[in-house]
Picture (cartoon, rainbow, N blue to C red):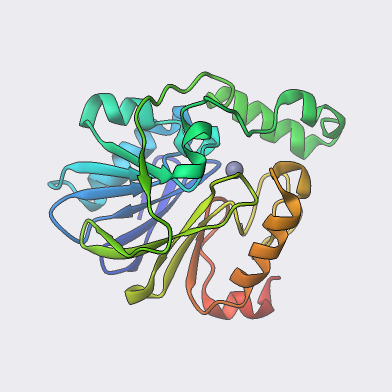
Length: 244
Ligand SMILES: [Zn+2]
């Protein structure tokens, strides 16, 4: 299924993976309401709303779970709070990054040496045009308890703290469905990457590159369907090394 610049894939009953223009989000709609995991850049608002409307036209959006506070994952949240009064959830360790009390995100200055490479320049122009440098105001975030199973929109899930990419990065396991949302802890493609398939973001994008690398190794061996923050869904046969 396609809307504007997004592709929507049902990866389990009531679990929809949406690949957006530059980053991805997941929609849970297995119950009476809808939960969004990650929320794209500020400019992805139409894509987020259209993708939700196309898979769950009657259920209200109630919750947004955040893997981490980078602007390509939380950009539409202020608009979603205003329009739908959603509750926003993240790991306690990530809340200061989401509310911008602290900012753990690469800046233009860090990228300058890379901008001689056309693919980085193309990525940055898209990021800036999509609101990547705009202030994002999220005032209230509720803490998710790592390792405790919780059900959102009819889908039981377990948030796992995977500090590395950011101080409180979470992945979300859905054990009943063999699905794991990996955020930026493991991706499968990126505008600045020359390869496709399961891969780690380069060290410069991480808060703690060593910890991020150690985490990523554990996901590569999983038999879950991986839903990354960037790039297509990864099915178990892929993570066995077909692309990697
Ligand atoms: Zn990120």
